Image 1 (cartoon, rainbow, N blue to C red):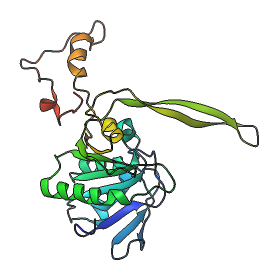
Image 2: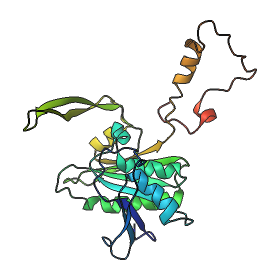
Image 3: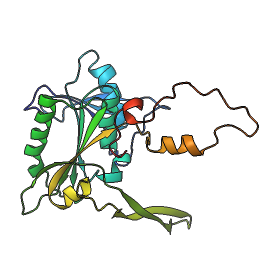
Image 4: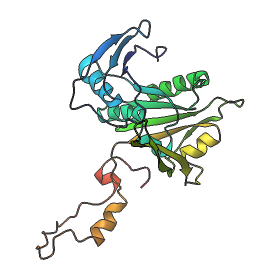
Length: 260
């Protein structure tokens, strides 16, 4: 990012994998200067990734607008449903909530010695595209990059989020005092056979970009529930029906739903 402009870093001071969009409420946040990056104004924050964005906007930057918020590069995939658990993407989505253009980058390699070098030119290219052409309001980009291989990256695909899930189980074990504890295990299962998804793109050595929104309304569910649900208690008089009911659809209720 230093090739693109002035950089200010506010990042967690400890690993935050699987933290999602948690924020710190019951304890103070600590913010300390860091000398990790030479020539860069940098801070370590005791909070979550979402906390870091809030502190950066309201305390570190104050009245200085951010042209772009970049989160990551995450060590591991944040494709498909993983975006819901991701601290990396939650930082980007928090930035979108705050009205700042944002991108979350992830490398689909969990190896302890994962090589990130091949991602560098693509990250710079995507960031330059975002700065030059903008990101839609209320949107954060979820960018996943295939792990390094003998084949060069095939390119970039704009995608939708694949319908996939974790098939999970808890392995019960016992500590030295014979007390049970549980270890979360599971396999990732792709239930989506479309060729327009992030999982398809990554499987074919493309970088996937999924525009994400923080409006989680399932717009397609509103007409069905309005027509079939009884929304009053038995015996309670029905409320007056508006002469002009509010139309149902993302264009009327908020940002477009890419899965609607």
